[in-house]
Length: 235
Image (tube, rainbow, N blue to C red; front, side, top):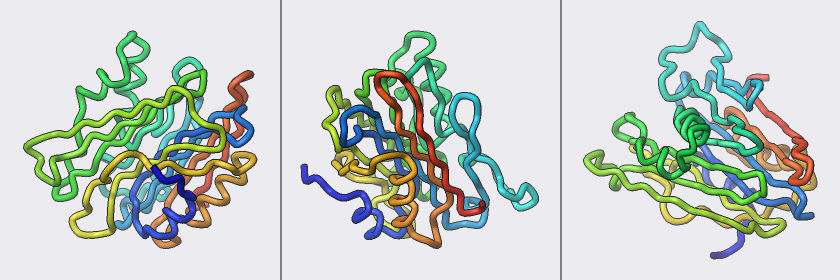
């Protein structure tokens, strides 16, 4: 698969929806995690990321304008031990709770499917970063827009390459209805020196009208120390 610049992918796509990137820093010493959300409706855009004890959550920026919290208020990132779960919905809790019981990432996600938001049937994208820096990604989506069948895909990367990562997002194109992401996670460059620099790069290349919030974390694989950055359009 061709190695791409993440900024080129983002610049060329006005509405990738929600996206997860997992990878390894250029020096090979840190795991790289990024998650962003975008929105086209007022309800979706009325959100910020807020840090919690074990990760982050989404929260309404203006509570008086929140019309429907389902599917948009959740914990995108939660730690479990030294591992990190990152998803675009409440399946974060499904995965974390399963892992604590000794159930696998894939088994946990086999209990879930795409989001119940016709006609888009938004895919559920999920990632699991392990303490050794290996990681897994998954996408659960409808059968090309047909909710009668769920398609579940799982990808495992047991020896991430320094300076590279994999990126998956919810929507293939900015159309109506929104078509689901197609193919394998994109192979992308991860050469920013730290979380702040990578957050600046991603934030600058997300569509200015549609971007909502961004989270980036660089995790030292030896010590577990975390370097995090959050960007909110409503700051």
